[in-house]
Length: 122
Image (cartoon, rainbow, N blue to C red; front, top):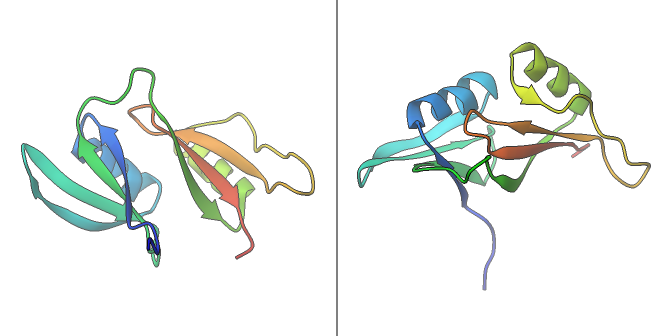
């Protein structure tokens, strides 16, 4: 049966620009960059993560895509502040929904793809 998730894919217009954003701005590591059809197969991931994000060449959905990709951090407030200072399109503030939901916020990549950063203690 299924035992894990290896890769999730995001469609991006410009793979070089996306690679710079995910590696240079978000701090993910580049795992793979190889020829693939007319473009390249690029995978990025947080250091030590079993799951990667593939940056696939194509035309993203109009207005970006709500990817449902959740990235984690032990300090959502610090990440929110750092990304805002780097000019990333982040929510105005970190969302707090009470004691049963961790602090979280969304960000948008240069193609409008929406990702969520969720605070975790693990």
